[in-house]
Length: 89
Image (cartoon, rainbow, N blue to C red):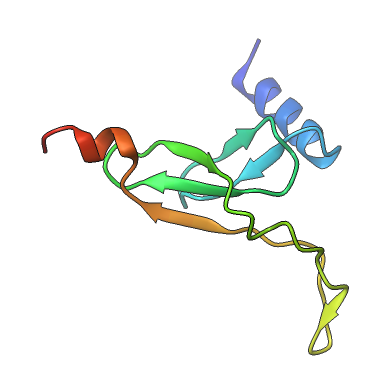
């Protein structure tokens, strides 16, 4: 199977709402099998992406704000994960 087939399939699944594309790093595409609204965390030391349940996305999205039609939003956090905090630098 070619890499193009894999990414085309991921795009189709993302557009169908079966998974979520996470653009937390400018040079990489990540896909999350959990399509429900939730935050993500990128560790600046090990570059891993983690799901982060903060409760901040539990409010319903208003249909518009100041004349802008809102269709969605993401909330990403950046810092150091628990594993990297515990390991010596």
